[in-house]
Length: 320
Image (cartoon, rainbow, N blue to C red):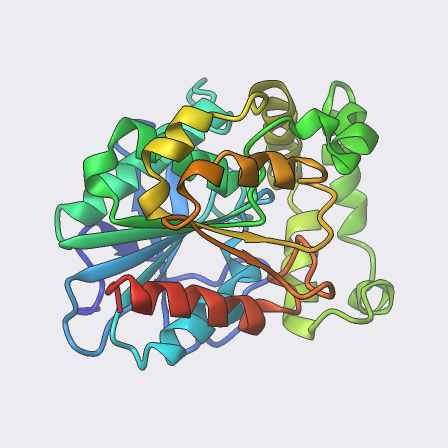
């Protein structure tokens, strides 16, 4: 695979929930972390013109890249293949790619930050310009990278950003207890039973989802370690993501783009709090609000619409 950068390894197996035939426009891969003894799933859309720019995408939670392939493919197609795109999954979330059982807690928020720093440094060793797009908690991870290594990042696009007071959002108030012991362990064991559920049942329950997205969901629900890691990471999010880092946002306002849902129960009233952080510098920051029909989980059915705005920002920012 000559089009794959040297910091990625080809993944030559089909993961649970992936299409049986790999689409020609991207390459299935893994990234080997140096800071952590772990692997993470990656997808690579190579440029057609040997571009020295790379757009990196960080998932939300659960950190399954295959939910986002329509969205990332749409951006690559809008750019006519004139940019490299790298999708990076969260460590420990991808069925079929288990992190080593060496006693290292590689799936907490701090470890995920280290993992993202690993791959950002690897990208910048080979590409001149790096822009990071991120969804949900991926936005918080991206801001930690911007704080630690601002010289590596050209710009960031934060989609439905969950970057403060997550326990006080409508979904946080309803679901926080589910993320605490013993529920992650209970749901992990229940996943074995879910393997017996016919695929048709999932199609019926999620009737408005594309077939491919239902298959990704089935792969996730059938993976005990993926469910456990996603739930324990969510618990860490509730504990860790509290006060808004206004100073960080204002310091890097010229690099930040924000895309909010009109109604987002993982952000809630804090959308206005985040926007207020930029009032003194509103000419620099770029803020967009999605159509009321676009939910927090935009990647399921609305990747194309969100891709349009992301492409526009990347184009104006001379990334594409």
